[in-house]
Image (cartoon, rainbow, N blue to C red; front, side):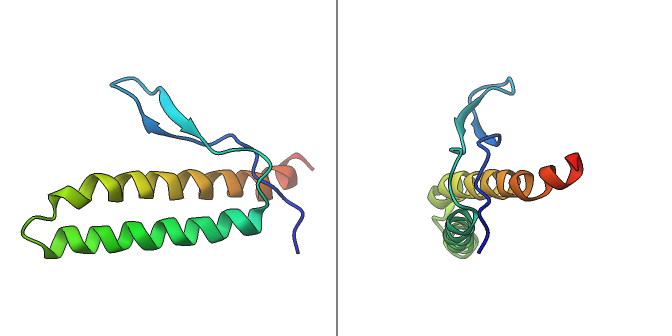
Length: 90
């Protein structure tokens, strides 16, 4: 089992036309727990995306799917940094 934890570097959910982000991944979350959450977030984003594609009124699912996808990507980016940045510094 890994002792790696998230670093809290990754941000997501752009606020306006600038690159200012509203949210950040919390530092210190065990990588295993973060990966489990990524799997859940991506699963639900995929389900909402499918509902958007298959429904005549699916547009209401598009924004939640986008936000869940942004959260999943931020977690993956932060996990990647936690696992591979220390190797680059060595």
